Image (cartoon, rainbow, N blue to C red):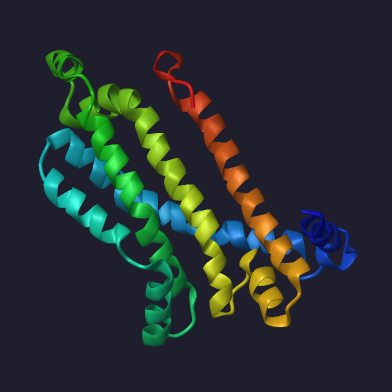
Amino acid sequence: MTRLWHYLVEYFGDAANWSGPSGIPARLLEHFGYTLLAFLLTVLLALPLGLWTGHTGRGGILLTLLANAARALPTYGLLVLLVMLYGIGLVPILVPLVALAVPPVLLNSYEGIRNVDPALTDAARGMGMTSVQVLLRAQLPVAMPLVLVGMRTAAVQIVATATIAASVSFGGVGRPIVDGLARSDYALVVGGAALAAVCSLVVLGIFAVLRRVLVSEGLRSPG
């Protein structure tokens, strides 16, 4: 523990690590850039499909099979394969991250809508709401806690796994880890790992705020 603390002090106490293109602020911006882009792609792909499948009740089995198949994909192996096929670039990084994050968003949005009380859905239809209005104004607000859990899980998985970008010559907080291992500089390794942990905590904090803003007080549960 003492050595770990020594490495942390050495890394974060070095002024050179706080400036320039390799500095901590630059690495954090790079990392959150990959994370945000992958997360937005995930939500655009998975959220509408999960919500609509849960609303219509059609294709649920196929959706579950696809989500479980995506979970089985080895993230790093997929990254290496895509780099070999298409060369180094942003796409080979984003594809594995999106594939990793799609299942929780897809399944939680589907299950969230499916678990809405049918009486609420019937009442909304009885008021003359269209199918889209029933989904967005009646079902989604009730399903929002579970939907947000899926999105939070996806975001944390992305921010933690985005360190793999450094293994194919990109930046982010994985860069100090890769460089530190190559040089046997464990202060860099520990510093990069600490930054990755901080990124995950920031994401958790953001979703805690979103939960308070988007979820009705009556639907909130501890945790």
